Length: 318
Length: 265
Image (cartoon, rainbow over all chains, first blue to last red; front, side, top):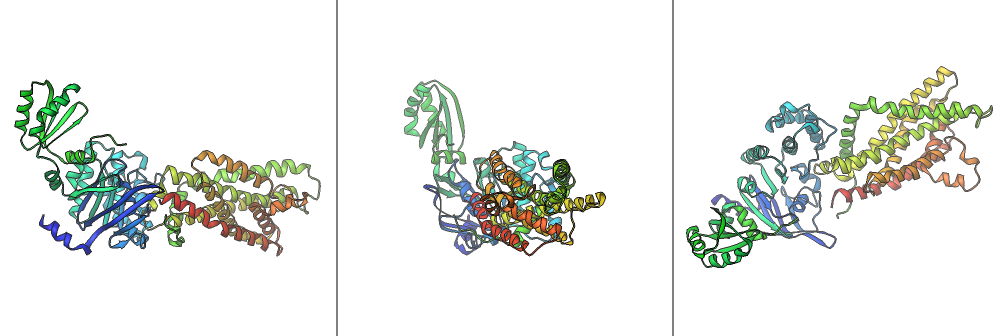
């Protein structure tokens, strides 16, 4: 992207910039020196398995965790020196719902706006507009506990926008939502980037990252292991096509041996092997010639998920 | 962990305001039990037990006159203690209200100061209502329970007393991980203070070291202040007020420090 390279040269305009950023809890180093830059109007994603350091990084951006080392500049200011000023200009959508249950839907926005010392009239006006934006205008006087999970998430997004922030930080914005609710949240986030807002989000969902992010990075074990646009990442790290072949467990090894020479790489997990290849037909022919009985073959385009799994390993992380 | 910052009054006011908005919705339901409790003590002990106390009462006061101002002080203690224990814990751990607030320009330190002020306000509000009831009862039964115009200074004093007990309660809250621990706080701190601070009998008449120990406890001085203002103060009350101010100031930063540690890693 031409636009991207132009942005990179103009480092001073980064909305968010980290250099050698670390965070330790006692002996445990949650973030082990990360560098990233996010530019105005961009949506930047942090992907990674649980415990990769994504949430800790987000917390350092919005002041709930203090960096141990390195540099972190948010909206042009050092988070350690200008804590209050930074918080004045960002919006935060936390991973866990922390709406004020003692207040009604609209009151949540009104009271929250007052934390920013915004004039009452302005907060009132913005609250009405934001409720409309997240399609909750009919729920203005409802109690928070009456809202569905998707509605609560949308209210959190509205709340994060009450101060008209330069940067919106979203920690797993659609975790736990049903598909309809997720799509609605995505639409709203896309509208925000369309308006020129800068977004930073964490997610477990590759489709979410592919849908929303201009650029993203994958974190593992407190480090950023790769960074780029979704398309760049796919072309750089995996072959264009993937074959998922299922077979009896003791046949998997033989199967791997049969296709290895014609594939870029082969991964084995559970009862299947994943064959990355530029040419799926050659692989299928090899499988047929080997005479091994396969129960199921799925042929698809490589996705961000394959990049993720290839780089972070196909094991379960909790 | 970064160093604690001093709280800002503006941020504290926002937290106070949030609590006031919610209080305004439910004040009628919350206020009533808080009025009933001291009235129950006043009736049961003042009239019931008081009937067995000889003419002349204590220091020239009838027993009801003697305990009424002390109940003003203990009422403020209870109001501020509930606010800074159960209510604060729920906002901290269950509602996660503070987690939301610290992402705004209101810092963790401001939250704690705001909660102190709110607990003080609540104590003053309840106390003022109870003071009104006491004055009214005195008129109805023609034995004044509040006999000095200095009583007008009681509400701001109750605010100060509320802040003091809020600092204590918040300190306990900032150190515990479960609501169950409050049983210890109320049984080992609040109830003994309630019983042995000179509300129901003069603690000075006890053999040493009981009065000396009482001198080092907060409610004792709060009771002295309220009784002095209700009956006409002597300059000695300034010592009690100074004690409350020094104790509150000396302790106030500790809960702020611990709460910041809990909210910001």
